Each structure stands twice: as structure tokens, then as C-alpha cells.
Image 1 (cartoon, rainbow, N blue to C red):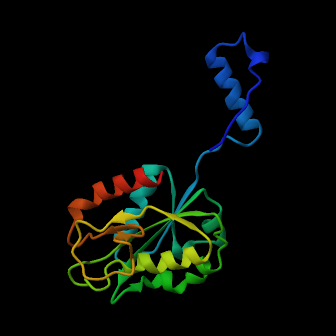
Image 2 (cartoon, rainbow, N blue to C red):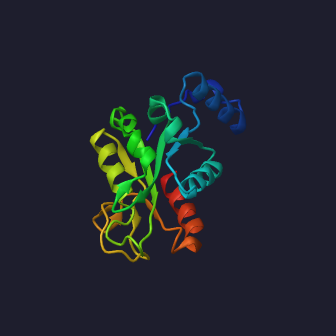
Image 3 (tube, rainbow, N blue to C red):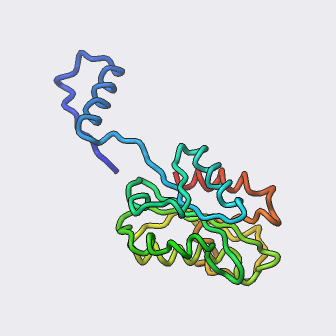
Length: 195
């Protein structure tokens, strides 16, 4: 929490609106007033995760970056970092994430706020549903990040997932194959939670 102390005595004749404007100008002068910058870094083969990342970016005025085009600064030069990755096969990262994982593993995420989303198929892969979320979570925690956006596992039917800690996903789990009708509401609720 930021506490601000203003010398009101010098501004007693100002209206509330003018005092508020003066406060905002002083915030800006000292670099306190800022807008939140959000980078959404994603990997996608089928286009599903890309579509979701672009939708999120539009909703929150964020910047969507394909992991294939990501630079090291994309992981650090933002207020909030959102990572998106589908789970492939028996709990594997999407190939573009796999090939470029060093970018994340080498990023200084100390005190960085990170949120993670992923797509998976809980019917065909119930033993590795959205494992990619859990894999990315372990990496960013090791790099010093603070992860937000845990979600309830209720409403899903799977047997095991690396993305679950204490009965919660460590991010937003989406299943476009079996529950596409839930996606929009899940995204909206999650974005409200993390912002």
C-alpha cells in the first residue's frame, strides 16, 4: 500500500478537483503514476492457445508475443507476465516452448508477478491434464516469481495433473475440446482475479 502525504495548507483555496489534478501531476512528475504493462507470451501449434492469448490481450490492453519471437526483455519489462502453453502428449510442453525454454529459465523473475494459463484435453489425457501449467509454474517459482491466478479444480474431470497444488490449479486450465462453452466465462473471471 502506498501512503501519500500532501501539504494541504498550501492548497486550501483549490477545489477538490484541482487538488486531485495537482496530486496526479505530482505523481507523474515523480514517476509514481504509471499504467500496468502486461505481456502475454504463448506457444501454439493448432492456434487454440494463440486465439486465447490474443483474446486476453484485447480484453486487458496487453501485448501478445509468440514464444518463437520473444526476446529476453519480454519476460522482464512488464508489470505482469502471463504465460500460455498447451499440454501435448503425456504431459509435455508445446514444442516452441520446449525449444525456447532457456529464455524463461534464464530470466530474472525476482519479484515479478506471473500468471499462467494452459489448454489441455481432460478426456483423452486425464492423467496429464494441463501439465504444462505446472511445468512453467515450477520454473518461474525457481526464478523468484510471485505466481497469481490459482483456480479451483471443480468442474473438471481428470485423474492427475502437475498443475494442481492443494486442490487448485496454479493457473487457468482451459479445455477447448470438451468444455469450449466454459472458456469465455473462465477467462473473464480469471482476468478479473489477476488484475
